[in-house]
Length: 219
Image (cartoon, rainbow, N blue to C red; front, side, top):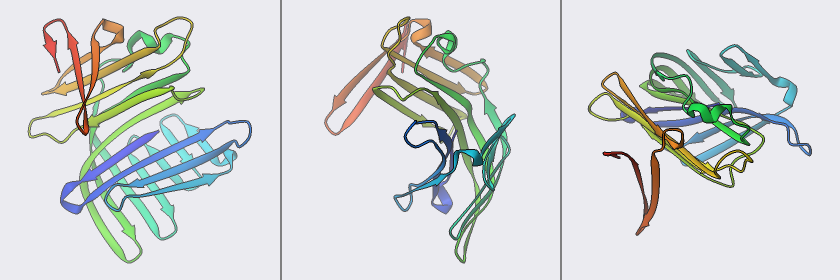
């Protein structure tokens, strides 16, 4: 489970990952905290039995992530946030019918945008957050050999989108698949391998250009 919260005015840009791995040489649960502002990444490893999942709530010891709440405590850091006003997907799955195929990796968008309020305490410093959230989840046997993902939900209009793709070996489908979902003024537009859209990736200087097309539509 991946959750990101940003509050531009408070310089908050945090990503949290709640997960477990059953890798035979080292099965364990883990919580990962990436702070874009300080460019720091913390990997907290826990015994696999500390991981719990109950309906829409993920727990690793006292650390909790749900649709409405985030609570994390670790070495002087306390994250206590409330989540509301979700922009959930209007369709059942971001992957379309691909979610029913025997792939090695699946990616789902939980919501494209939400309101996030609460506090982040770092030692004696307390940051009062009034920002924006995003949540997705990834599961399967292993990550694709090659993959990309990006999302954005900070626009003047009510716009948010996500774009993901990768090479996922399977006996029943192409090696490459992608999807992009755009939420614009309460309407949702979905494009992907499952509806014959195409994604072109091109390197231009020091950046990468993604072009998604379907019929007359171009992103």
